[in-house]
Image (cartoon, rainbow over all chains, first blue to last red):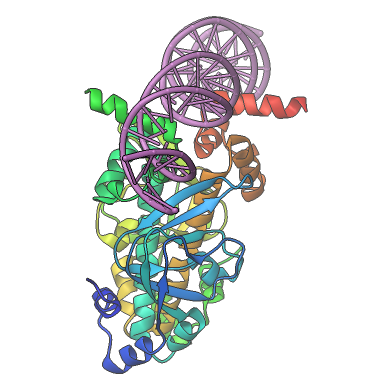
Length: 191
Length: 191
DNA sequence: CTGATTTCTTTACCTATGTAAATGGATCCG
DNA sequence: CGGATCCATTTACATAGGTAAAGAAATCAG
C-alpha cells in the first residue's frame, strides 16, 4: 500500500527537514461508508490523502441529481481543490463508498511551508500539473467518445471497481442513465 | 493591453533578476489567421503568451470532426500544456482565428529556471492551479448545464466574440451541431 | 428461512439532437 | 453587375438516450 511519504516523494525529492515539517501537518481520520470528506456549498480548508478505501467525487445539479465525476480507488490526494485554490465555495462532493482511512491537513498550514520548503512547493506544482493532465484526459474522453467507448474506458481506468459499486454509480459517471447502461451491456453481451 | 510582464507578476511577485532571465527566454512571433500554434500528434516543446488576437483550441476525433474546447480572447498563456508536462504527444490543436502576436519560449528553458528562481516556479504552480480551476469550471458547465444554458454561459464568458466568429465554431464549442444551435436561437427569439 | 429492500433489467413511449439536403442571404471577387 | 463561395436556417427523417413504471434478481435483516 502506498503511503503519503511514498506518494509525495515520487513527485519530487524532498529533504528530511522539509518532510518532517510536512508530515507533522497531517492527522489520521477514519471515514465510514457514506461519510463525506467535503460537501458542495462549504468552503474547503483541508486537504486529505486517501490511504485506503474507495471514494467518489460528484456534482449535484439544481434538481439534486448527482453526476459522478471520479472514483478514488488508489492512494491519492482528495479535497475540494478548486475551492482551496480560489477560496470560493466548493462545488464538489466527496463521499466514502467504503470505510476509508485518510490523512488530513489544513491547507493553509501546507501553503505556509512553501516559502521555506521549495521542494514542497515543487511537489505542489507537479501535483497541480498532474491534476490538470487528468482533467484534460477526462475532458477528451467525454467530448470524443460515445457512451459505449466511455464504458470501456471506465473499465480500463477502474479495474475491478465495477464489481464493487452499484451500477447506477457507473452510469452516472458515464453521463447516462442506468437504463441506458443496461442497454449497452445487453448489446455488448449479444456480440 | 496586458503584457507578459503584467500578466506574470499579477500571479506572484518576481525579483528583477528572475524576471530578466525569464523575459530573455521569449521571442516575438506573428501568427496569421488560420495558422496553428500547435497541432495534435506533435510533441509540444514551446509555450506561448498570446499578446493580441483571437485563437481557438480544439480536438479532432477519428473521423476528423472538430470539437472546439476553448477560445483565447485575452492575453494568456497558450500551448500544448498537457504534452509539455507529460512529454506525450499533444492531443489538442490551437489555431489563430485572427492575426495574432505571440511571445514564444522553449518550455525546457523555462523549467531550467525553477531551481534558481523559486518565484518563477511559484508562478508556474499558480498558473497550473488556475488552469485546473478553469478546467473544472468548464467540466461542471458541461455536466450540469444543457445546451441552452451553455449557450448563455458562452455569451457571458466570451463577450462580443459571437459577432466575430462563424456560428459553427460556437456550436462546436457547445457540443452541438449548427442545426441545433439554430433551433436554440430561434426558440429564444420567439420568447 | 422469509419478508423487505435494493438493484438491475426490460418495456413503452417521448424528446433532444443528429444527418442530409435544400433554400436563401451575405459577401467577395472579377 | 453577376457568378461563386460561404454561412445560417429550415425541413424531413433517423437515432441515441431520457422517463416512468413494472418485473426480476440479488441482497440484507430479523
